[in-house]
Length: 439
Image 1: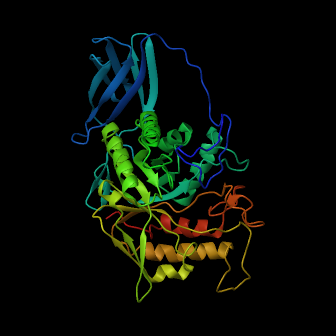
Image 2: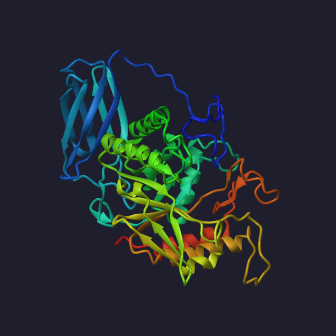
Image 3: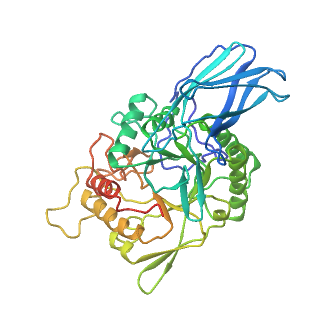
């Protein structure tokens, strides 16, 4: 596969990850009958949690073609027929349904059949919604203790695509104390979302509307819509996926806001059962005490959950700058601090007892985390964090010899699996539940 970036692509020419080419995922040839099940959506009703609802689409099937759904463990079997659009509406009353959650990642074997075609899948059932500044999982407030992850393979580098890759990356997230992961900045291999289903990790899934796209180009918007549609179609039956993200760090312009509002509308149209977010940039105003971060990006009006990225202690100020930073969130919505952190090369240490560790050391990265946690806890509507990032990853932009060597070093773990000091700082905060509140 040609990995050449193009100006009117999604993403465009400038990115901050390694653009691996060739075949980076499985390619399968599947034999199917003339009429086959090509799409389905089964989810828990928001209004009645004893009902599973959705649809099954049977490609090329005439109206009246039967469809059967069986969930043996629930003693549920329902039949329906497709309409003129080859789609069958599904409604499954259930008893004793165990809802999926990080504490109870219950999955059921689901069989879907129509004629000679049959599909078996594993699914969990849960609801996700917002109420004011709260995020509700199965009707209860939840705080998303997370980490961002790139699809970088541990130990060998290259794209993460094997089951071992997924087990390693998400296993580290569980060890960190996470109940949530942000899969940046593009849809990851399906093994990641399936594994998140099994491990009980909520997922933020994203398309690469990243940095400065050609927001005034209808052809680029069409590419974004195609990617969003394909991502939702693939993963709409993964209980782990709770957030669709339409963008990361895009400039606040009229053309961009119009473009991304169309993307938010499409996400809501394709999947009204999940929340839509984006990682926004923030404005900074100096104050007598320090600085004030203002979140008033007009895109926030359309989002269910506000995501914001900030790098106090790395790209601005020193780690202690977080102590004198306040936050002014102009939306009465939940906030996820979708990125924060700083670089450190594993094994690069400050002298023992150094009270002002140098940049790039593990000690300084840990200092950033200490100060950030204290600052974040002062934001009343904070409902999640996913610091940048779980593991170091390759990037052509990061060339600092001896420190970066074409790696972004913000990982809490090196590409060779070495945990840095900041890993244990965040792990303690997550496991002790001293970072963030659900309400």
